[in-house]
Length: 188
Image 1 (cartoon, rainbow, N blue to C red):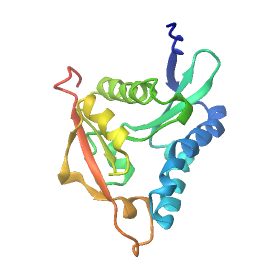
Image 2: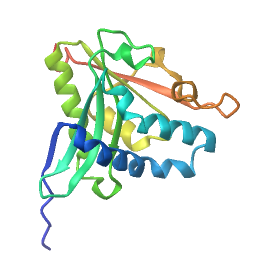
Image 3: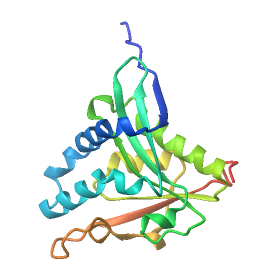
Image 4: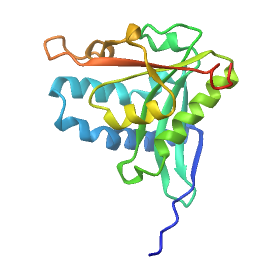
């Protein structure tokens, strides 16, 4: 049995010319949730995820590319000051959000590489903690974050509908908070 070589994944900061491709990846990565989420919540959630430009002044956007010319296959956002997300995080923490992997590139370690890049950058910034929110419908992401050392931080949980601007009449979806102590990893 001959195993095909896995493509090399390169993570770098996004540039202006990357944004259209980033939006394609974000849309494709989140399409699977349309079938499992209430329609109004999904529309608000997707609009929020796709609003990359509004976050650029407060955050850093990283992309993952396949070195073999496969193009952009993933994206993630890092807030050096997590409080700038507007979701109640402390200002001395770094916030991670909107990790997305093109469905055809899943199980290649793209999400892990992107998250590790944010953790590394947060460590270089000297912040003590990296934080993020997930939701129950993000099972694969939750497993990945746990293997990277993130632990639940329920005191920072929220209402995902409120966070993404979904109408209040729907079933509420919890935003599950997670944190990673960077000092324990040798950062900060």
